[in-house]
Image (tube, one colour):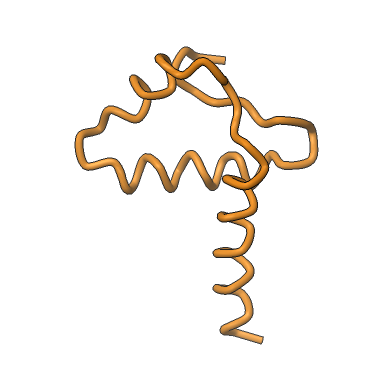
Length: 65
């Protein structure tokens, strides 16, 4: 895994970890997201961070059901 890239906490959250990382990339105005991850002591997302993306995705899907 390249430096500056977070890993998923287990084998079940892969899509949510990718979605969270993509969200950070899009929202980062300075394009320094990889530098932020290189300096973090923890190298993976917390479950509450993945739950945030999970809830956003569910809210989007619910609009079309």
